[in-house]
Length: 137
Image 1: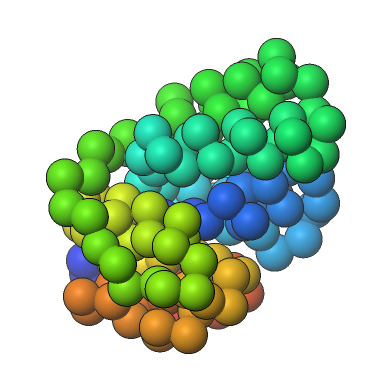
Image 2 (image 1 turned 120 degrees about the vertical axis):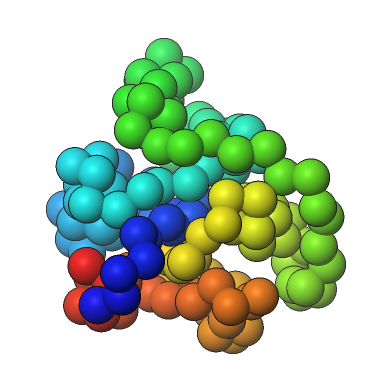
């Protein structure tokens, strides 16, 4: 393991999976909440998580806000200033890269195939939750 502190952006799919199921994404998020690595998050990702929970999963708004408040309290919120267009198949996914760049991320943790296809972006490793647990933590 590197001596560089791990700073990771967790994609929305990882966050939502961690909330509903006790699998690998849950372990990834828990280790971040325990501060074994730094979670990076942006307002755009916060909004996407909220929207996904409320609209797609019919999660109560109040509960979604409480979940996000807990995440934000244990994360570093970054404000991206650079826009990228690296993911053309789903341009909304570029917000993950933008957050990673702004926060000096070492990793992006995702299950999204469009993002995973990149493998790295500006020296940021793009990995699945399982690979992150096995090789980074």
